Length: 104
Image (cartoon, rainbow, N blue to C red; front, side):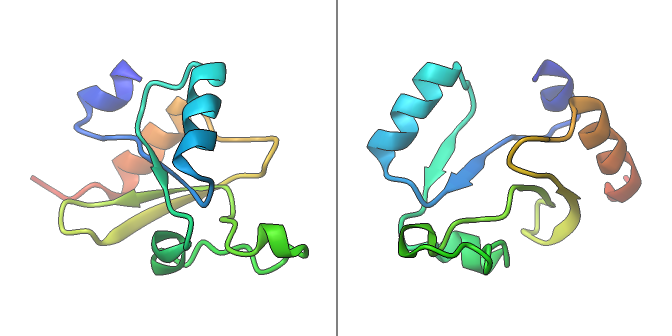
């Protein structure tokens, strides 16, 4: 996480789960970055992350597992796809950031 922070990046996870579910998940998984509870999936929809293939009613509004890189102007500048079981590495995230970061 320090490598990510050293590049001026912040990690925030978004889920349609409730705050209490996310608190338990963060504690159980030892997650030390913010988790945004988005039960109405408004943020998930705004970033076009809704998984339309989620079949059951309980899963309506669930997001695709992806990392979205958003710049300081709130513009999406990069996306790293993932799956429920396989996520990208820190190295892959930093590599993508190197590709898309604005010139200084």
